[in-house]
Length: 59
Image (cartoon, rainbow, N blue to C red; front, side, top):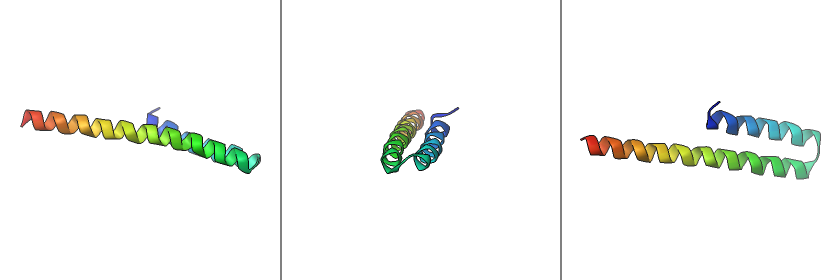
């Protein structure tokens, strides 16, 4: 499972669990999911930076 899949799974699980509990849970799970999504996007940004560096160095 990729980090992106994990982030989106966390979002879906978080919303489902929070809906069965209360609003405070909703906020907590959404913050957890956003944390995973942020980590994924930072990884994508780093991969793009590495790819760009590799392409520039080969040209």
